[in-house]
Length: 174
Image (cartoon, rainbow, N blue to C red; front, side):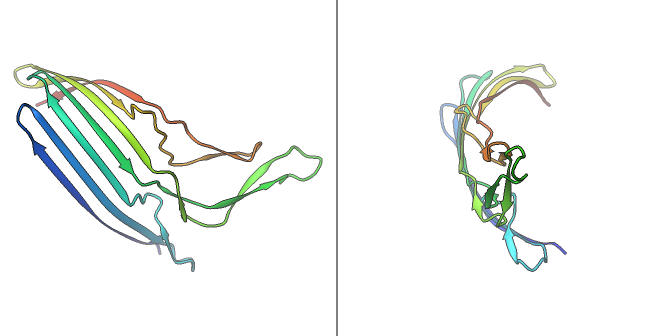
């Protein structure tokens, strides 16, 4: 029987200012653990990021144009501790490495920061609005380590590189 426990709190402040400006600040605290009834007790859940914070601003330039941005921070996700063993295939075989896990979710990946920017153009169609947008997610290209690959030929971790991710789209609002 798997026992999961999670608790937390979210705080959000929204403010609309004069001259077509608005802002949003949010903070979330979360703790999540699981106990797999295997005699080892509770461990941190895979998805647990204790702290998440964001701040956003929107400028409505006109009835048609809008520019917005959001800066985000999140605690690193939990991961396992391990040791690297070498020459696991033995002498006279190709040199290979392996990972031997020694703990479960006791350390964390690095914290994550990102900056997202967006431009919207709105056109009324009478019964609905058509919104064309360009959204650049993670414009700073920070890496968001959720998992790490392992190269068994070199014994090194392989982390995904961070990169900006542009989205271009259309949205209908009724």
